[in-house]
Length: 113
Length: 108
Image (cartoon, rainbow over all chains, first blue to last red; front, top):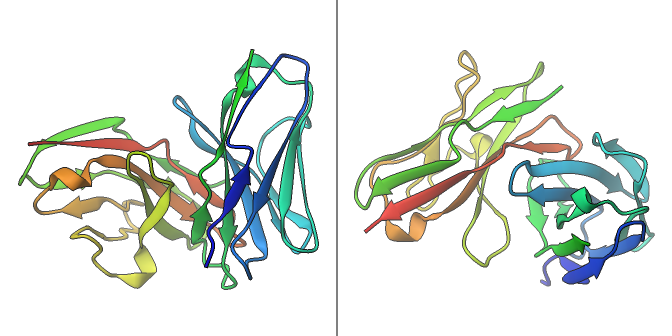
């Protein structure tokens, strides 16, 4: 069974640009969550999608958005990038039982210059 | 609101010594608690969850509702235990809140 796949793995952007990150969950998983990981803050919850609906949202500004497609693949978008958005963005898919067990991808490392 | 606190950023122990990684939580309902681990150059993965009451790689964790704690313990540390450990809480619907993590360093 293939794991969670995130693309791209690395990217460099400049302030003011926007970025789109992609996540393919484990086959059969309908929940996809996004986290921002930084050395100082650890993992911070961005949002969670289930069957194309945003079910939970963290405390991030509106510049951070996401969506989920009918095949459960998800994208997140960050507009008007700031230096502080530099981080590892992790995607995680959840199984059918809603137990809170998450399966993580390797992440997309974003550097904003 | 749900919150997870891991007070130690770094914990260094000698091989063979006991390990205790601390985790305290704040949640008004009945949470599910987890420990996740990230070994060097590997993705974050589930180590154990409180409802399973199992021991994984020699690690155990007991949920103490009175003290709102979920400390991770191992009686004898091994070098391969060196990793980043995250305590996590789920209040349902896959909204999982993580602590800031504790780096465990096992000294040979």
